[in-house]
Image (cartoon, rainbow over all chains, first blue to last red; front, side, top):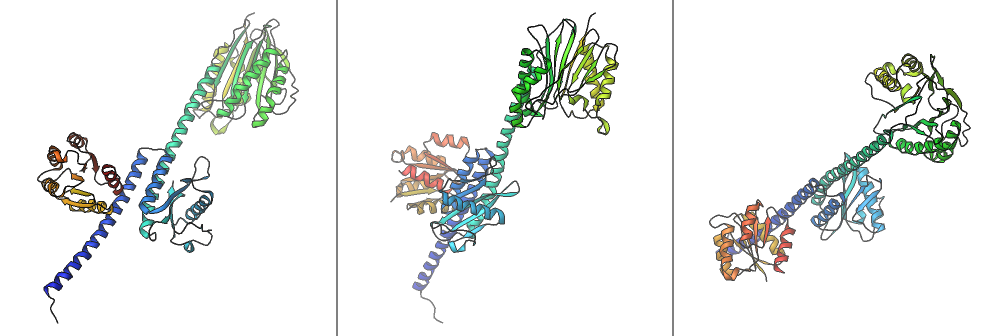
Length: 436
Length: 120
């Protein structure tokens, strides 16, 4: 065996040093790449903590992914939580968008990455686009489900590798978290705004209902209103007409919450206007139905209403009842009886054809008009409060002043409810004849 | 050709910096502490100096002060590398005339952008 000369050893060592130097360069390059990737993930997490807008985060994400993967283009496709439609970042030409949406469907359905370093690598159901020669796309999980896809297209040099897939998986993991955070933030903002609007609506409705009822010689007039939610669809209203009569109405808009409250505002104005301008109680309802019918049928709601006109000169009360809960009339000395509906509710038929009737409202005569939230209040074993209890209660407490009677009736309902949440708005109007 | 002097006692950090700068087509001269950096300033006349803040013997802040006290290096672009990014380090270095700060770990693109800006 021949020993190497000093010169040969030197050459050999130099070659080894060059080889090691090249390896070290390669390792340094990979180290820089890994550090860049880690910092990109860190920056994305930080962006989420800072609650940048979703759009800003996505723009940042695709820019990072594109740079780190050495790709011509990066993209993210996700379902818009507001519309449900797919949104592509960045915006691209129509054919590319259609392709990316197909990638979204494929990856979210299969919950697997799509890797193709040539158009022929693509699954059979893809129509490859001419300028596209390679792609990696991975699904991103939002709220435990695959809703988005993060991808890169056309590597600048060489093929996309397993490292690219790992990088995209790490970034898509972060992206999923960011999207979740952003969506929750946006949802919280919307919820907050709705709550604020609901508070305003409730304040406005309470303000309307808090308007003092008119005082009139010969009667006590009391109204009480308790919505089941922040706002409701029940209302009462009373105004003195120019001819000296008292026009009043108690009504209940079908449905609950904000939609019912909106219709309540309209119906209140219409019934008030009709009550001030028409001569008969039946005409109040007929006229109101003419004004409200189209709008109510358009939105599929109806309004039950009890309208009355009290003539202080004759102490007679004319009334008409459009599908409303029967009112309780109790003449002096009793017994109490029900004043049933005289026609269908407003908004059900175009021609209401209501009938009307009248009852005396002399001293100690009593009229109690409630909404169904009162008689349909439920107690133990889902039992309804019902008319029988209501009439009995009115008969029993008829001697009380109107305001105290109203308080007693609400207290009786509360006792019956035994602390259960109120299901429906509860509204009451009491007119009691006083004097000799 | 642009020459960048990199002064950092951490071999991995030096290697990473040198690699990124070389990829930009620039020449790199290295130093392991502030004293060596000042010596390299004399013999390599760099176009830009990158100084790590915490180094043995002569630290980055002292090296910065000494360099800036020399008329020849008063306008030399200097980047200070810091590990903490603490405000007091930044304030002290800024008072001594540093051009830019780079907090470790940094993204390669950050360094590339910074060099391009300072060497423009």
